[in-house]
Length: 362
Image 1 (cartoon, helix red, strand yellow):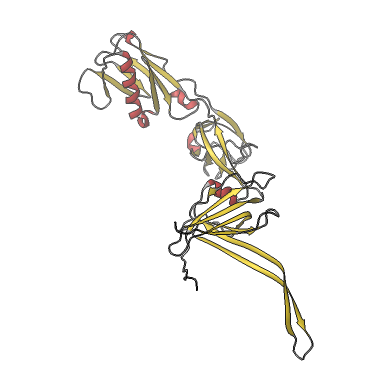
Image 2 (cartoon, rainbow, N blue to C red):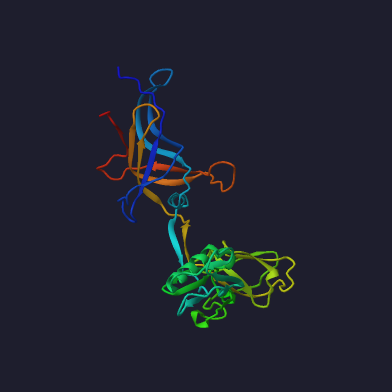
């Protein structure tokens, strides 16, 4: 008699989706953690009964149909898994963004003198020859080092100043944190004992540009998504400052990360039915998107066993069809999970439906 094999199953599940129009897999992706995986089989038979006596007796049975299927649960809510569950595909949206306002501080001929200043967005930075503190910056040995030191100081104070900076040779380039025309209002000034030592590009940053659109027939007390178009029906994300023509800012609220605005119920500058001309900046960035459709999801699937106890049996299914199943809870106090059912099909006449490989100890 064979040795008993008591098993507590564990392992990893992989899926190689077929290339479009073929039964050739693209290579397998790991689903991630799958807390549950099970198989089932059903058999349809045609039975024959003898009626030669008082009680009919079954004397033959033939199998007419065998169906193999399975299901698994996955708690790795990755984008590829979401694309499979929503029977769609994964893509990206590359947002070039609107223009950011910029300006420069140039150390033209020599490093600053003690007490010289650069003012950015109303915040004065003072150059000192020793013991800097607060909004003071130590005078450097060369103009190139001074440009770099100023850029580093600005980046350390980026939240307070509303700008970031880079340095190239003796020039510090300043860029508004928020995209759009709002950055053009950020002030830039200098004071210098020797005026030629420090040059600023202008009284304010410049070059910030906005996206513009019209929200038609708005109603107070409602949210509106910006940047909606046919190719991007969910709209843009990561917006900067928002202005509405003829409307004070206290009439609306911005959700910058989601690219949405809320029209206050008590907005005095807006009445229901208004068309609003909205201008806003857009940060450059890339968003990952899953588009749900009704695609047929077919491919090969492999289970590599790593059992808690018992022999490791690896399963290979050359052709399965995945089908999302059950609920997908977007809120709750448990880990999110998605559940799939799958049919085990015969890929072609040369390949069987299922292969189980028991790995022998080396």
